[in-house]
Image (cartoon, rainbow, N blue to C red; front, side, top):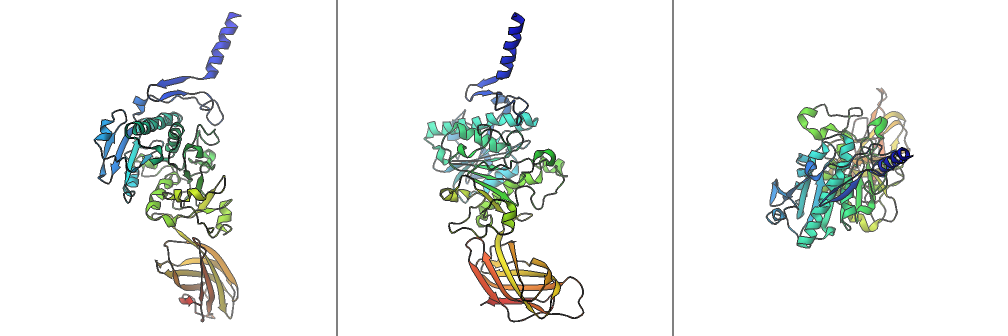
Length: 464
């Protein structure tokens, strides 16, 4: 009987889980929900703060090219740095396998210098370059370290958490969540494709959630299931605003099969993960300089966005994906806001969406395609194909097109058509009317044409 009860007590103790405690940071357990669930089957405790060695690398306008390493354990390093208590602080941290001294983090700091900001790159590379199950638990210590840093700022300088914005990529997004749970009243958390394995479908205390800060915005770029598609990012909406550029699964310009960059050895560890996963922080960086090129349209699904069901923006505007998403904070009117947009396939990623309605003129039908280019106060676009098939006079063809520039006030339209096959009759075709509707404000420009042209000849339409 004694043996039976001894075994029973051992099993109960094993089921209870293990715990580690660190002086500055508190205790961490591998009990449910941190392990022993279908989403997190393997139990791991986070490594010690000393082993993870979380570092804080400060960039400001005064030192844009070289960081100053500061630490809350030795606050005199903060006193001696360019940290300005009058400015907002943005922590930026990386994910699995990456490191805080990669160029993308410091580059993101540099494009923020239009503002006065303390930009701190958080490096936890000693804890990220290990098996994923371990790294996914090490972020709890990383988040606790950032929380400790903020608490020191608060107690030593009277610095409010409402001045703190935490930007986290991949596992770094969930590190930001740990910080937010420990420090109430954070200004904002931005999740850049928050990591999916060990977080998708877990309780809110495990992953990023909109309760972790006053405002939480998320960019999803690699949200296909990890098995079998090797998607690294979460698909579930977890913030106040969740953006799904290009549908949130496969990004234009990324290979559809390669997981690793073929130049891995020469380009560094950040290219170890999928191209789609990396796009989230590239979109964010571009949004700092071209915010109006990343408007997100509230829609139930990407296919509805593609067909124009959620076009144009409502009268109170569309949220801007990325840096300026918080401008929409006071306009959120639903529990769940999923937003869709399209981007380019390479930098610059910004795109401006228009609805084009083209009514054809002529005497005979042909099979071919039509192109449209816009001219305006903001510049001229390249030609975009808006329809291919039977071109019949009197028909109207509608297309939603994402242009590479903000055209501004549209002043004229150029129309061009071509046959699919050689046509010895040399038919003529033209655009009788073109309506151009801007996605941002729904303003409609009307242009008229009075001629027909042969294929591959530009027709210019002017306001009517």
